[in-house]
Length: 95
Image (cartoon, rainbow, N blue to C red; front, side, top):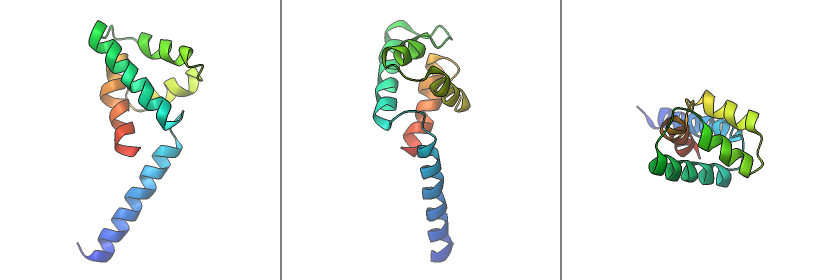
């Protein structure tokens, strides 16, 4: 791959990352807080294959449940452990 192609690829990757960041449903710092809280809760109590900890966190932080849950589901977060395994991974790669 020549330099021009590498530069185009890098520019495209940066553009895609920016699009992903713009689609985050809440501020980056809140996403980080949510994923940290989910990690602690799932580690302590395990996952019951629901979004109980995620929904609880959203309510405690007074965030839009519909918007956050839609984004999580779009990125494979259908239960608390999948929020950590899938949505957190997407966030980490694009933050």
